[in-house]
Figure 1: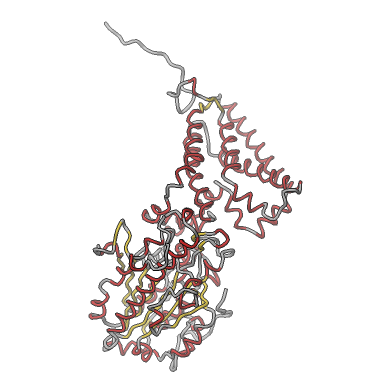
Figure 2 (figure 1 turned 180 degrees about the vertical axis):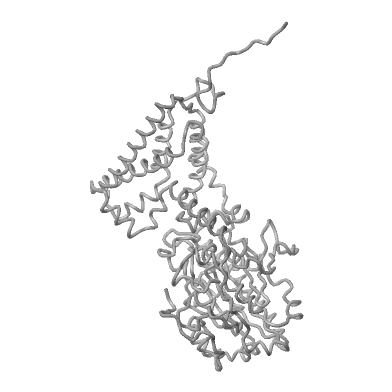
Amino acid sequence: MFRPALRLQRPATSETPDLPQRFAIPATVEQVLLVASLFWALAANRLFFGAALKDRGLADPASWGFALALGVLLVALHFLLLALVSNRWTVKPLLAVLTVATAFATFFMKSYSVFLDPSMLRNVLRTDVHEARELFTWTLLPHLLIYAVLPLLLLWRVRVVQRPWRRAALVRLGALLLAAVAAVGALMAVFQPFSSLMRNHKEVRYLITPANYLWSLGAVVAADAKGAALPRQAIGTDARPGPSWAATATRPRLLVLVVGETARAANWGLNGYARQTTPELAQLPVIPFKDVTACGTNTEVSLPCMFAPVGRRDYDESRIRGSEGLLHVAARAGVAVHWRDNQSGCKGVCDGLPNDSVESLKLPGLCAEGRCLDEGLLQGLDQRLASAKGVQLLVLHQLGNHGPSYFRRYPAAFNRFTPACESDDLRLCSREQIVNAYDNALLYTDHVVARLIRQLQASAGQVDSAVIYASDHGESLGENNLFLHGIPHAIAPDVQTKVPMLMWFSPGFTQALGLDTACLQRRAAEPASHDHLFHTLLGLLDVRSSVQEPRWDLTQDCRSTPPSMVNSAPPAAATAAH
């Protein structure tokens, strides 16, 4: 009987047994990890070394010793982290994933001067596909070729050597001890300057790559898992309508909150910018607040904070994310709340409440490639006004000036400042072109908010209405070679933390709440912050609750007959600026 010939083979000694032997590079797991750690220390940590050695002269031998100790520390740190989770079956897949992730991380850190701290990682994880697509430019390809593709080709050639398990365990234990000794020795050699650096510039630790995004990712996952296991804590359970609601049976009341995106105060025409980027609003009776500080420098931080009773002045991210916010308190009192989104969602602040997105409305001429112009936020406003009843709060979340593709945020009619940058890669444009595109996007925001106010003015005979506009954070446009946003709040430049804000009221709204607009104009010249929004909005909605703090209501002292509050005691320490 015919039997096929059996081909005897040696047992596979690596996870890639089909690799031709003449191309294979034999190496132990520890050798592979050491080479990877050396590569990352030298190729992925230029920003870290630059920040650590910023104030040190190259002619000073101590600077070279400090740099050498930092290099040893980085190699030992990454070796320890990898050696704890790697074996001969997992080492290559693990390093492949980390190599690609590190290549992406270093590109965006270098291009936009971002720190990969937990808040930035959370922002990255919440980024939708449309935002991400705008960040993937052709200049990313050569970077990936050098820092991802070439290392992966080398990694593919590696044949991981197999050892008897006892010997492998002893070698691994010895390698871990040696790495620990090297890390401790390097740290002790430069402990004083290194501890001073970490104490005075805590953000520098988030430049150590890939440890930065691994640590931050773990922190975000742990926090989200903890939050998911607990129900959102209810606040303002005693919320109830105030006495002015009696008049809404015949005079409905609508408050519109426009949450701007990436608009910075420095380029806002109403704030005195050299260019008039708010020409339409300048013709309307709005009240601009010219010194407003944002709670965060990215949407993921700022948006929940804007709707929280205590924001930046006593910042506690877990408490903010684990609790209800302004919209839930207002709804509990009977306010008809609706959130309309033109960006990446409400970040939890509208959970369980009526909401929709501009994209879902499928508006012809306003949407393309998954993005819609902000005028779509106003769709159906006339019908809402015609059928208005009681007290309503409408929140419009803009796409605004979301970068880097500022030129995609406005229609051609608003391309007034030229030449404007028309590339997703800001490095291909001059700073003048970038600023022109950004300012054009502000012109369009001016148009959208002004159009909203004019529509409300047209219905002022039937509906008492008000508008508050506030941007979530600012933006860097090349100052100090910084672009976009997301710098940790403690060290962020003013252009990322100072934002525009304004108010507008119909005559019937001011009369119903006894508002003195001249007084508000004077208050608008003083410092304010996102911390005021929660309490100001509850005051304007005339919602009574013990969670409302009158001293943080920007309109409290400008009411001719201010409604009495349940809690009359002011907070122990209340200041407008942070």
